[in-house]
Image (cartoon, rainbow, N blue to C red):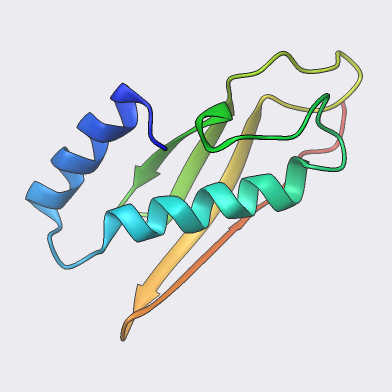
Length: 99
């Protein structure tokens, strides 16, 4: 499931970088976010609970969580990295430590 902002973003990315399967990369990035955040989330995460923005020139993405989040847990923005090569897609994200 994608947000309207993600759908527009994916269309723009596909127009400028058609060699990357952005829809599958988005799915992988959301799975990375889920696996990183699920133990701390106030409820089970759904695919539309995170909005992903890719930066194709740096191989990075930002995941913004769209659900209410506990004040003592570092979120709702998670940095991530991605790589696509020879039909293989990799994504990873981290949860920053509290300040």
